[in-house]
Length: 318
Image (tube, rainbow, N blue to C red):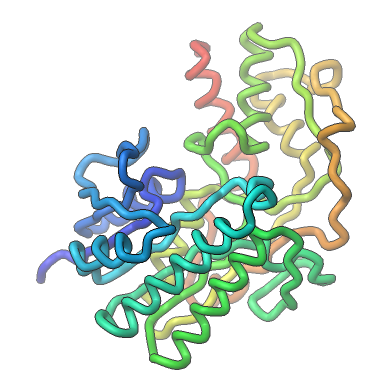
């Protein structure tokens, strides 16, 4: 039997690299899409082919899909830093909802046998008023990013029902790893703890330590994405740990990994404190566990410990 083929948009990001690792290990032929002029990415594994495409240019997406003709398409590419969506909601909407619409249209018109996974976000829930959230929870996003993800999420469901596509929307909660860029909070914390332990920094400034998140390892979430496309029928799934942790928990765990107490090192900067969220963003992954047999392989402590160890090594520690 010929190897199954997969196309991953956003291959150069954290999620794309973990998914590529997984698919290659399963014997897939994997191709990743990058923006013209961009490199492969630091963590893109060897053996991954590359095509170019731009989320804001539908014809480039059509060419990328036609060149690969994948059995499975994993649409991970999107602007990922939520606060940036306030700067240009027009481009955010086009990049997320527009690109998803283009790929679904390609599937419906030209590749009805292709299976497609769309990386949605817990940002679609916003002020849902219910916690934890599952696939049936009301959606009331609070950011342009969340609105764009919700529009794409609705397109996946609508096109699936209209055309019988095998299209899946994975509602992903916060997921991290040592491959996460440093401007994301968990990496800022783990790098800060490592730098303080190495004597390369004296303090770490953060916002509200009471803020709640549901953090998972990116490798676990991407394993869920693959399982979703192996199921007999397409459906939407929440992928999350189901466990609430505060930023304070994150700080305590990171500093414990380097043998330090955070008191005296961590300072709250009022400028970084945002209005508290009325609905704690915690996911209920019951459907993924029951239907797909998906279970996280990393605990919160495992995740943060791995990130701290990588940052210690990067800073020249042991």
